[in-house]
Image (cartoon, rainbow, N blue to C red; front, side, top):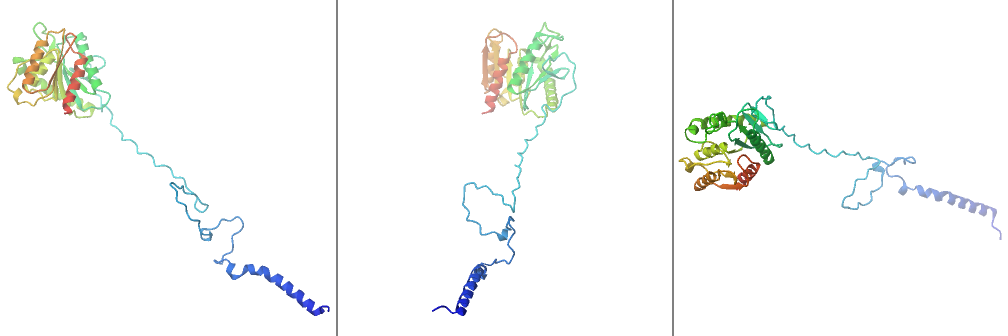
Length: 322
């Protein structure tokens, strides 16, 4: 039997209706946007609230931050390293230029009768060096030698140096016009205290120039200056952290010596010099009072030598470290 025309028409209508309803199932309530907002246009970035759940993070040893479109990374400049503290100039000042024949080229004049030398770097150690007898006049081998020796050795050791001048009339007989020191007896009693006061004044002037207060002071000398340095040490005439007698030195125990705090005392002389006996006698006196002493003999003649000061600085510092 054939299908009635009305039944065929109804069947075709049902098939069409089913085909129309199938796409509409995609827009059911379960799949509609939850926020109710319109979806973004093509190519627009999602706002944070519109992004899906973030993937689980994977811990790493040093995971760099990844800039996002919503929060672009802003490069941060590295914090500048702190600048080193500004150091004060050395020396702090220079005195007015002084015209004097006493100071050779290469050393500075503190005043008309005093030379000084400063090392390249700041120091709080000071050497007061007493020269041997020096003839008058603008130039002399004695003056050139001792100022060269002292300035070189002191700078090498990082120590400031003062080189004051003695007085005319204090040199041995036959050298009446030469500069010298009161090495003992009545001359010492008459002049020593004034010299020590002058040394203290020169020290303060150099401290003003350098901009530091010297906390360690050494007193040394050669020839006539060595005898004066020894007399000051034996009689307690000056306070110092160390003493030195080069190409000279002598003396006997004094009542003051037993009351003084022992200080390291360096004694240096040349095997071709005539002062060896008195220098060794000085060493015996000092050792008897409990002072640390170093005696050094070198194959040289009379006068200031850099080797003496090199050894003296090392000896003084060795005892300071104890």
